[in-house]
Length: 82
Image (cartoon, rainbow, N blue to C red):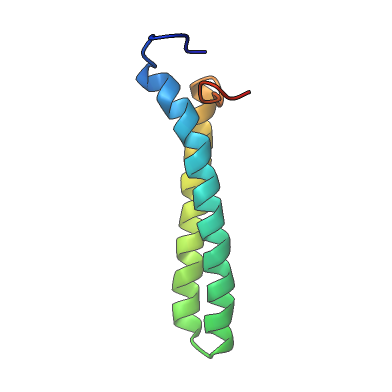
């Protein structure tokens, strides 16, 4: 953890940021899928497929971000938390 006036390294910063980005992407992917279903029910199959494709791309991005986070030693709680 960071103490006093010590500066946080970029690696520590990204270990804090990555879990937030992953969660944010997952929320968007879920919302995309909800909207894809609505659009499909409106008879717009091609548009729905595009939205689902985008949701799947976010899932793929999250897989890559999870891998990066593992290689960095896992998540790190922000200073003052935990």
